[in-house]
Image (cartoon, rainbow, N blue to C red; front, side, top):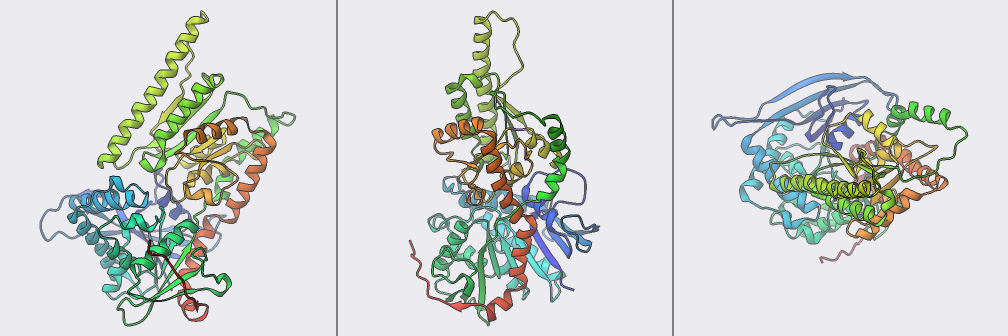
Length: 525
């Protein structure tokens, strides 16, 4: 029987502990109805004791019961993980993955730090996982690799003689050619990527960028470009593109490029907050909601320079200064999970976030003190402009907090998708929904145009967008909510999984039956 082997950097182990990281949580939700091996790093770092030390993989088997959202057969999941040595962690994870690829793919080339030993370490770990795949692979198995940590795994698999179908999905953005040209190893990395059978991006823009970059770096290996007849077009925006390549594998290789926007488990979220909506409906049968200045904004991010945290705080400060009515009433809850603090750019950002939040709070605390004194008040309330939380919160608790908030604020400067945006809408009360304030640079904006779209690089766009969200009438909030929910239900998490795996499992059929060659002109600039 065909097995699905999933490879991601982190693995959500079968326990009840909450875990930060949308990728692992999303994968946990979709691995249903198949025999699955989930492979990755277990989060541990060990010393290299001697020159003969090799990574050892451990396995845990568990039967996961089918749920209401995927009522197929039970899933038999084998969790296969390994620790990284200190050297591997520094070179592969901190070095090339997060000091090179992450800033590159978030358009922050100013933060790239290239070191030859880091690239060598990245290739060592990619080869390590390819060797483990070689040990366990069976003829009908299909491999699904996730995210930028493993761009080269398929190449190493092919070098080891693995001919199975291998797909790759980018959970982060795929940037345009000029950014790739700033990286020394781009040509080799794109050639490694070409050894996958399917490359998936979050957005159509990401897919178009991927096509242009592959066309540029693989032009010497390019045999033809093909499109499915139902989507026939010479535009780089067309779907179901395949590139026919000569990679020296003794046969032509077909690389499929497509966009598969990741969704969420809408049914589960609605179940988590259903009791809240029922309670609200009973208590407010004859009431019409009137917006007041006492509203709650929620923002949930990793502390990462791609999330636009400092720009959010600056815009929020500006809004309170320009709209004193909201002072002492409006609150912003920032849930922010620190990460990668051993990478200097992240430590600096973490310090800046805490300093800025304290600075904003102190500014409006002093303002409140002056107002209290002028009004002869002897007591001060407990209001502060920004409430800050670093705790990892359970999913159900977070959905409740979304339900209780009037505005969800996603301020990404560059984001593959941003599932917080989708989860915020799914967790809303249909009778009195909150408003999503969404950056145009989040991948979610491509699908969620009914949100209030803002530009985090333009302070006025953020303050005006916040004002619109805070004063939006109920009928408009309901209309936007209904439009957004329709999209979430159509393109949910199961649809994302099914669409990608359909292409991956069916890749040979598409290669031989469904494709026509077409000339495509791509500029190298």
